[in-house]
Length: 165
Image (cartoon, rainbow, N blue to C red; front, side, top):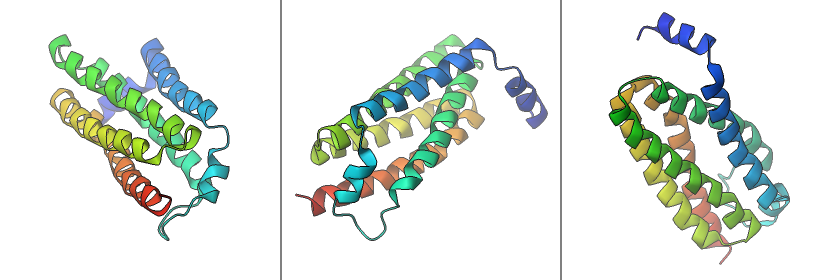
């Protein structure tokens, strides 16, 4: 698909994109409800010097959740059902692991368990990127910033767990 064809496809999203956006941003809302004072908790933790400020997480995740949904939508619209099915199953796994992290880390204060979750999340995102790449490469490329951010967040989670034992 050419760039013009992709832009045309994005111009007429339809109900499936709206549903995927609602699902993906719903994960953010549920996570936020499970940890109503995440920023306050974050500020009280011992953090490494390279930890970002609390205010940065909201804007970054807002953009990432949008790209996660659009990537799934592009896969949903491309290829055969046999190719899409495993890719979208992996997408759901990573979304569920994403959903679990915030309540574990901020809600329950289980930094070690959250670290296990985010490491599994990182692997599942990498597998999703690979599966999306087999269906539609631009969808896989949309997930690369998410993969990089979660790799960074994994290192941050480990550091926070280590510093707050």
